[in-house]
Length: 155
Image 1 (cartoon, rainbow, N blue to C red):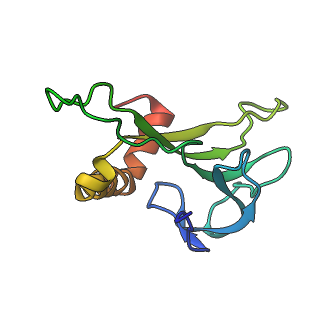
Image 2: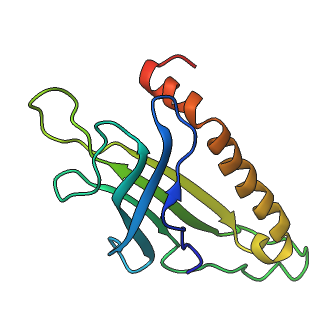
């Protein structure tokens, strides 16, 4: 699989963290259609942030569909393809955190779901590249603002 992040990974600029980096250690994904990495060390200034542990996970995973779908045959009369199937990919980051003093660890997570209609990957791959570039570029650029919104509820 092409999902192979560099280690250490450089974190996006987020208020409260200074030059964050994350050392990735190859881990076992929850199923055979994924790759997972555990965060084993932190760089920069990330006061009170913990690395991965059994009781407080910090992992990032990418999953492909269990069965990659292709385009079905078009109607021989109309040329229309009815019910184009989707290939669904998921990118998930999990980070254990306590909701309050003396409380059990909960696991907040971010899930990005990428739904690609079968055939687009070969007919217009540049459109997929542009979509992914835009999505993660805006996510990178807006990481600090997104974190503020998630923490304050102010959009």
